[in-house]
Length: 371
Ligand SMILES: *Cc1c(COP(=O)(O)O)cnc(C)c1O
View: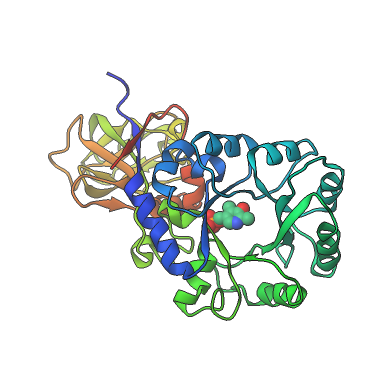
């Protein structure tokens, strides 16, 4: 028998979450963001649930080839654009749209030999200071692109640093609007947090006062709340798309004063029973999730105890007198019955975010598509 750990990808939940993006984005077309191997879900698996999107956005050219290999003929956007001049040949061959965020990329385009002009998304650095032209350089970059026979339509794009938090998007939005007011072209502004918290459906400016032609749905499609713990997936009407589950492979009866695992980081204050789960950090479970991280055993919520090791972790069986070797353990996602353990709760216990946990699912974990 193989080790009992597995991950499930819930394609119906992906489709459901995508429909939530459509509601939140009102009239806008929706990019399904499938970078990082569809946030760890696997591009081919996620495609089953996300094929109702208007396009796929990603940043690895090999991943763009995989989307085309699945038969997707619609828009594909490279979010970081080209990394070197010859990437433009692949853009021509596969009809990829690409972000232009740097002067060098315009130089490469100017030197590119193509009969079919390419669609580009010109990116503004409106304050995040990661990628894009500064507002004062944006107009001249636009003019340069417009003069190139290699370039077809030019769309305008920016990315918010604080859409999920109290700083919000107002100042970046003002910068973007001021620097683009005289420019034609479609606009793409919102990631998950921006469309949920600042979209027209939420009474925000994006899509209402401010034009929004394309939204970029990443984390919400994968059933994690971008602004947890302020809001959870229940609040946003999202469903988990990834379950990580395993089984108990041993139990131990502890006496008062006994400790558990490496570093003896948990000590029993009274007699108690614990279970040992076939899941550790080599499976992608976060090692920094300390004692008290929520976990489901047979669908009942309990907690981890002690340090996570490479292949195992320990759980408190006090609420589960009948749990035994073979009992089902849900590390995150959907448990037996109606039980749900949001990946965001586990992430918070490990001082990280749902994004990181799903992206870090280890290759040794077998994955099955369900629904
Ligand atoms: C990853 C990414 C997104 C998606 O962000 P989420 O927070 O997952 O919705 C949107 N836009 C850009 C440019 C990105 O790199």
